[in-house]
Length: 316
Ligand SMILES: [Cu+2]
Image (cartoon, rainbow, N blue to C red; front, side):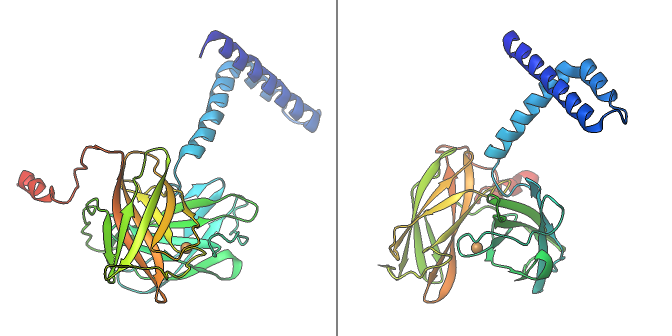
């Protein structure tokens, strides 16, 4: 920061402090310990103004740049799991989203046909569930959830409160028991699910929206009669390996029922990502999953499949 800017901040800081003091003075009148405020302001005005202005800027930038899903609480909204889960037991899982007033939110905007999308993945990104809870009384959400294996899971609530903008909050769900994480599946351009083959065209680009086209076929024949699911012919969730950042993905409405489904996904950084495509055909929703790498020529992650053997050698 140059001298002129610093001076500017200093003057601005003083103006804010005086303005604040004036505000307090006129609101409180002669009652109360009003002098404490100007005194604090005079002694610490420069550092306070500096750090305060800087802090405000940093916060604004961080919120714009921080991917969704990494925080349990953001912009005054908090995801609160209310139920403990045991491995392999179907559970009526309940949670609330509390708002800035501390009370459960009951007003939501409908996005992609639903008021709230609830995604649960294992922390190793090997399992994925896309669920639609029902709101019971008082803003408590309820959904039948089974987590087959012990371990660490991440739950995401993707929603937009009435009058607010879209948010994705994330919370850890921990299931007691012996846990054996799987390595991240290898980068691949094709996936198989239930006799369907799904291929991925396009590459994630760090810091930019990138076009991804997924093509669905069955027995070698392109599928051209996909069924609408959540207001589109496919729904894509993309998560960053390592911290499970939840990417912004926008579908492109081509109006065609396959075989191609197009999305724009923004990878916040170079690295590996897991893509989960939900599509509906013959009345059933299926999920095809991929590992994709943003940024060519990345150094290979150490937990790549295939390095397991040498890793074992090293530990012996
Ligand atoms: Cu959903």
